[in-house]
Length: 551
Image (cartoon, rainbow, N blue to C red; front, side, top):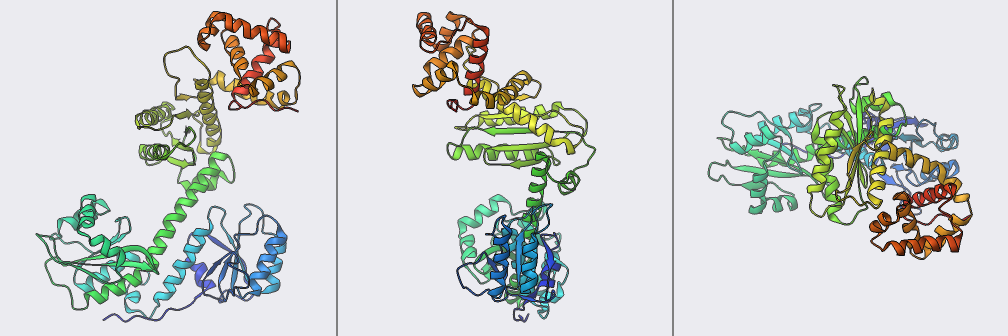
């Protein structure tokens, strides 16, 4: 029999020692680090509710030092053991906040810039779960410092069985030693790193998974056609399912205490699964933060490269895939498919996903920039093959000598995406659909024009005159005259060709041009006027069809 031990408190010192990833930084502890922590509070959680030794996450106070200092004093007044404030990046914490903590005697910690509050809560849960297991627990003592792998070995010894420990997605986290007589399902699970899909489907059909998700006791499954007798227990933290422990009686009988051993093992496994989940989330969050900083040209590039595991001397290029505005489930599925395709391209690829865009950092150790265009071609083929998916525009930035310069390639790739969108939006008589992916050199002139238009836009928005009046009036009436002017200018003044694009009679177009002259005084024979009209129409096009702003 494996005796259980009562829960114990965790100190601030133990909490910080448990934080192996540097999620929290201690700023000051006026009463020392042996203050007891009994839980976590997010914000104030209701007026006048006692905090009683809990860690308060100051998620509410923003950039005002007075508000943040007030939150620290209020937390201390209500009995908090410590307060966690968000990082200000390279800036030191507010002096007012530090002073408030020192005056009130409450410990003050700072959350890492790359982390979020959910990570902080998970860290506290994990640390307190380890403390709750207790050093007096025989099984916990047997695996001290060994983690899930040692736990699997020890439980196998107690149960006289083969053990696997899995998460809620049936991924294998640890297993005991495997003999040559192991059943095929166990062998497949260990070799594949997860329970085979067909096995999961079988367990679901049998109803065993439904029982496992809802039961708090050990479940027995009898031997069946070469499948050995099994015991399984869920690993839970409160009401939350974290994973499961499976015991297989490979050629022998379970020990008399096997079920009790599995119950205690499930308790002992809780902090390890919480820690595993925290580390997985923290690593992902740190990589996301580093990749966002690297692609945005923010923060320390060397630190970002270290977090991403990228060599500083490797050439790279950035590929940006951006979908049209969301229209339903098909939109979300399309971006998910592109993300999976990009991450599967090569192990060293790094992918950042946003609401309507994925950005791919592609190392090019061979110095061949054509690989980036090849990846864009793959993504385009996938995007066009997905049923009911919206258009996806894919831009390839130039190859840069090191990932430190990735922000330059990323900026160019986004300009390419914008150029592709702009080209597709303009009327064309061509029967071939507009290209949906391109390299930066393929649309260089369009990008130059877009940059010039962006530079001109503030001047135009302050400009009055006849052309401004024409566009403002015509947009409010539907924009027919503006579209006619745009087609006429795009056709180089060729009325029949412009009329064909507009699908109107040439005389109809001539009438509209004459109306522009008579009503607004627009003389298209004047080269300066043509230039101003061309710029104005293009500015309106690149502003998603919105009328120009009036002053």
